[in-house]
Length: 254
Image 1 (cartoon, helix red, strand yellow):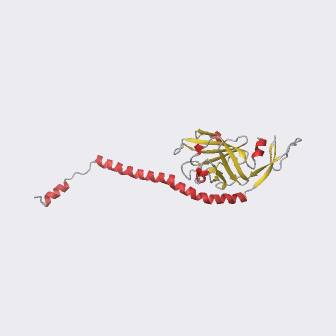
Image 2 (cartoon, rainbow, N blue to C red):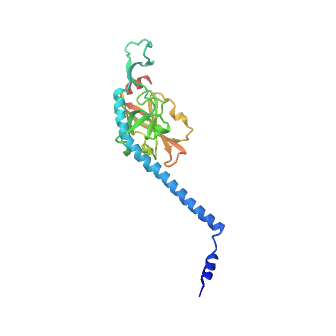
Image 3 (cartoon, rainbow, N blue to C red):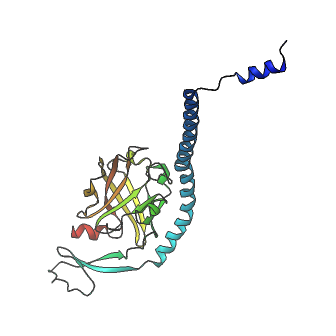
């Protein structure tokens, strides 16, 4: 029969975990902690930001409607073969049988302003429209999509560039890769609805800044990350203006 001293000796003699075992346990717990943190980050990026962006769209849509009513819009004279006659400028002599035209032009919105709505009938998420804000800063793109300030506004001569998220913040451009030549894109602004037709879809490196360059006529360029869940490349969709308040005027001067 063991005496109390024998039991005490037995308890004392239990070996402690070796350094290697303790190290392995520490690494294991650290890995679990890191895994939980990563999972939380993924959930936050994929689901929480999506919910927040969707909620914000309601308020942004209302803000865009208010902007449509208050935006500064001007009518400028356009002479075919010459171009836009800026206010205060001298128009060239008009040839017999020729007439000037009117281009509707709106002032550039302030950064962060909800000023337009994009609809793409082919893409389920965009059939009802997605509000676009001015700017492509990180804060601007938390709403899902933003217009690059250095480019033309939708419905105006040049190249209007809109960038949007593909997997977070509402992911308005999630299925942008489904667009093909001939698909329609509609953009509402203060001067009306502008209808574009897709001409080309390409994938480029992030350094291919030429996609934002001005182009003859009126173009809409949509940009997003590619492939999904990564950002190593950019998916680009080029669309040309075919209908809208300025379509015929721009066609005449291009």
